[in-house]
Length: 222
Image (cartoon, helix red, strand yellow):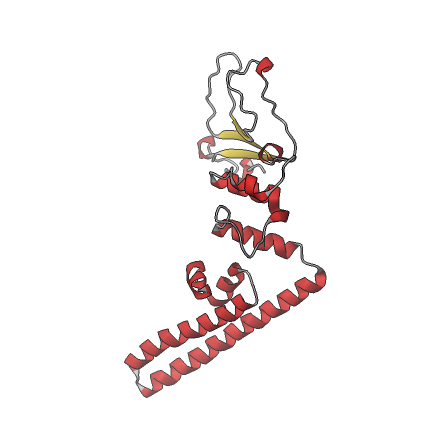
């Protein structure tokens, strides 16, 4: 993926407004070989991520600091002769390692029980999106239909809540209204969230339907 320069500046803008441009190439093959005969002083046979910067060929002077080319060679991260999830997880030390482990071992993952090395909010969200993309038409229709029902239920609750709030104002129960408003709304949202969890819906969908945070939803699981 490459961030286009035209997204950084408009016609007539000075060039010092240019933001950093990064090209990322995710490769499913080995592109960069590390061999002693190439004159390399340090051999990194399993180094899968390289960052290249523009540099003068003769003087090695690096001037342009706003442009980088990154290559990620998946084949160097994945052991094709002994392909198992445990060996991949043993290599996970950084967030980039975690993402590459997901890309190379997606078919071995249990989306409902991710290992701790991959159990990150960003990764869970991406996996749920990938799962939705692989649904069959009928499965997607059922999923969207049920999601619409849950949104309607949340909307109906909000309408009942607003009606109760107006009735509370009319009776002048200011203090009780404030406390009951918070407790009633929280309990109803929690109940909706528990129902959605029981249906194994993605956390991202539950947060959208109930406005609860991921941390609040995680606490409801226990």
